[in-house]
Length: 189
Image 1 (spheres, rainbow, N blue to C red):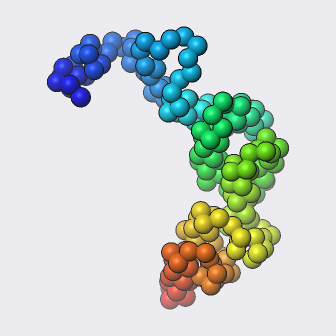
Image 2: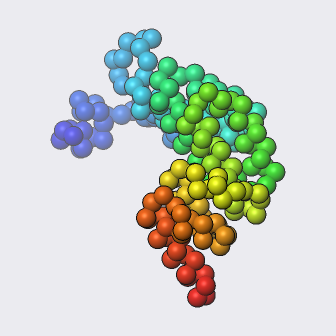
Image 3: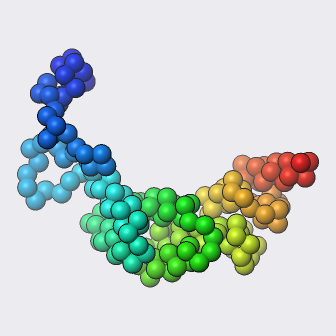
């Protein structure tokens, strides 16, 4: 950062940012001088996708499913799927197990077909919600789940049955140890 930039709070060339040039909260500035029609760099598109998905999530399940489908049409499938998975994580953690989560997951399920990583994350959120909400889940499904899912289950309000299973057979030592410690703590309280 140049001296003029730090002193004026402006651009690298030293020109101060006018109120009209400052991005609004949640907006992401575009670099000056980019030719029209040239796609924005991935980091800006990623941030814009997250903003669009968050706004759609607040508007309703059908609109959210449409926004997810639009993001998945981005020319960079890795970046698009990463934005969708980040959105799924943010939304799922705020939804309580039950009808609202099931409706949300059902609406997104068909949109995620053909996109392995986001579809897997949605399935694993469904498993985690079933475990946390006392729904039906299988030991085989939890044993086969990704390291992320097993770690998230251990750190959540998983019942003793799930913790015992993970303490005995999780894939990573970290998850096995954490599950065993949580079980031990629950037994001594």
